[in-house]
Image (spheres, rainbow, N blue to C red):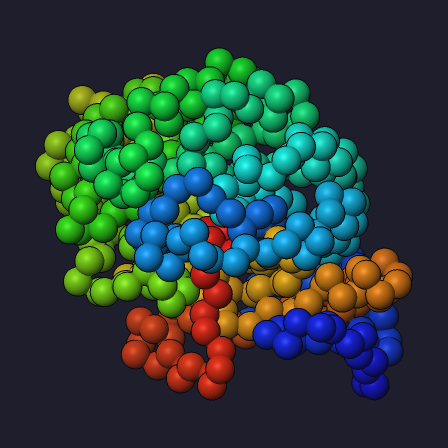
Length: 385
């Protein structure tokens, strides 16, 4: 099939190709490994007010670091337009990320626009946001009113000294915990039974830094209705100095938890779920929903590439097909060069149909492809987690 290329200015990324034969969205789009497209993660800013060493280390992201100019960022209207085309292709979940997404001015306007989208069957989308929680007390009510349904807060420990060391800007843990309370107060993540199963806390575990915070974090959130998820320290990007000996395998982490709390393994909540779920058990050894659950995300030691259904849109409109990618596909060029919705939908369809990414699987087999000359893996602060 012949193709036409709309030229782009960003030479770090591939030109987005519009196939001559339109790829009409029907919700059945699959990649080379048969994986559907169900989840779109949208980075709305490359800026953050924290300097966590596993994401935006201060020695790299210092006062001289050049962030993207505002003109390079997708506008809210551009984001909504692209998101609607992804929804036509089968996306059911939108997650706003960063950087720190709450730093994007007037983010509530974007949330209102995205909350108005519907699937081809007329169903609302699962609309959620990941934040470091620093601005959540101030923003929670407005986010809820705009249509945000759920929120995930990144929190790497309860000990204030450890938390300040990890965020590296001396930000107190009490303010993040207060932000979580604000989210509960306005009902973010609350279901019809009054439970906060849609409110989650993510903890990245780095052996040398916050290993001792695992049990205190579990004890704090057990029975709170909030799901705590532990994430293996990942080799994302090129700046975080990743070493395998800093990774605590999730299997070992579960053993640590089981020594303190009886746990039972739960079924995945949805196809393509990244976290393995474990529920706190009662005296009879059965899952007790009142005690809640924990999750482990094992992207280093137990790859879940096989059913990965996620795409990622950067703040300047580059589409990435893997968290560990080195190259994106420039959709902004299509948006700003007069492409029709049909052209953009077809380009998205072709990109996904050609997808064969499985970095974590290959890494686990010691078969990861050699780096492309002149290309570096995308940073988490640019593409979101």
